[in-house]
Image (cartoon, rainbow, N blue to C red; front, side):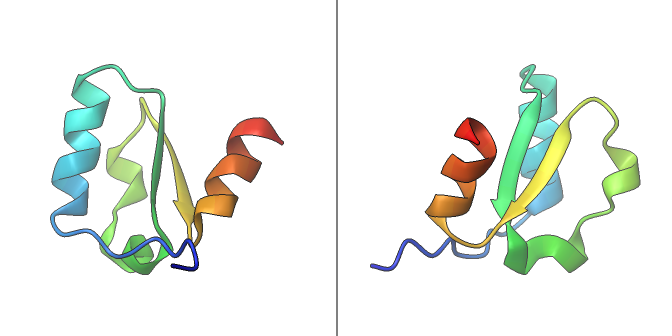
Length: 61
């Protein structure tokens, strides 16, 4: 219960779905960093996070 973000399967499919729904920012587990082709996503900002604290830091500064 340390706030760790776990890996996600089919991450690119999930990003495409979020992009289609109009999301502007997408936080994903840093474990999935190597499996994402960031060049294929131009309408959504991608941010890798390892812990839930990282998400709050990126959202609220």
